[in-house]
Amino acid sequence: MNFTLYIAKRYFLSKSKNKAVNYMSVLALLGVVFSSAAMIIVLSGFSGLKDYSLEFLSYASPELEISAKKGKRFALDKNMKSVLSGSGLNYVKCISERAVMSINGGKKIVSIKSLDKNFSKRNVDSILYAGSWPKKGEQVVVGWGLAYDLGVSLNNYENPINFFVPVAGKGQAFQARDIYNSRTAVASGIFNLNEELNNNLVYADFSFGQNLFGMNDNEVTSIEIYGDVSENATESLRELLGNDFYVKTKLEQNEVLYKMLKTEELAIFLIFSLIIVVALFNMFGALVMVFLEKKDNLKTLSVLGLSKEKTAALFTYHGLFISVFGCLGGLALGFILLSFQSYFSILKLAPNLPYPISFELKNFALTFVVVIVVGAVVSYSVSMLIRKNLTKSLQQ
Image (cartoon, rainbow, N blue to C red; front, side):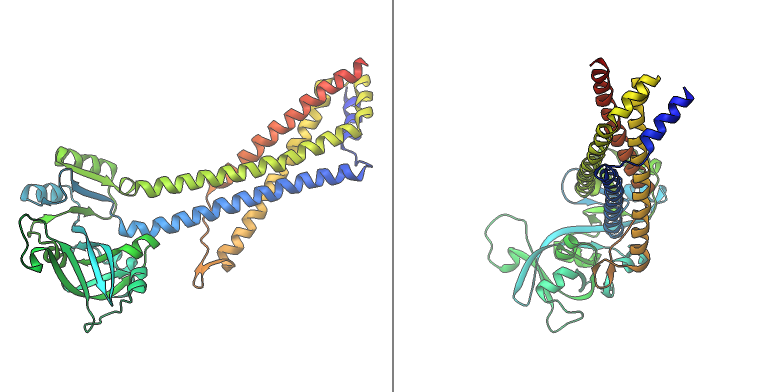
């Protein structure tokens, strides 16, 4: 049997005299290499973009957000303060409402987020693009997109920003102040987070929100907690506050964004998995061509004692050889190209912003598993086809 296997290897692994067969095998291998490299590059690039987006969002979104289940506002009473203090959490009072922003003849509905002095300097430094954080009630920080669209300039006291909010009430209005509240402010700074927040969000001092929205000293729309918060602390806080309040984690606050990113990641994975399937079907064609060329030799091997199963298994091993080494070559090629991008910033999203790359082991493992599984299925399919063909050929 060892002699028979030696003959099998010689016939099967020897270089084919048919150049088309050799080219097909090389193309099949290159197809696996480049499709694997493309998949790991795109997955790593998307992971980099996702991390980049969530990094900036982490500074704008607190670890926990406490809000009332009924109504937009609630009173931060002594009992609630003692619960928060007892939990050892540093909290920030927040007033978040919508208003009309007007300057230079342009108007836009924006969200105003007024935070008290407990908002940490680390978050401030991470958010600010230019200027400074509001130090008094008549100052605000606007998004980069909002400043560009409405022509907002920093510290321009001659041309202040006007904010208007409707006044809730009943009865007939005789004066403008019965219809809306208004306040003026100047932009002390500009922030840059993401496109949506840059175009719709304005940060302000807590007192500015109180005056604009007509709120009492202890009234807030939410309590925000920044920094690391354990899962046990979150559950404990929910129990202490009872059923009248929502305690939302960062994931729950941005549920739509996280779902969108997961959906996009799944779509990219499926698209490139399909590309790998197409590339590996080139291997199917290459293996079939090898079989057709060496069909007579395989009959001879069967006469010498090599079973149909072992003969067909040769093609399975050949297919797995192409899949494994093609995938490893593709991952190595992808890693090299990603390293070039990481160190030399060849591709850029903006003049000063290189395309972000994230090296994640799961992306490499996922690419390897997809290629090997699909390659094994294709190789086994070819071996089954060859086994049936050999059976018919020997019966003739």
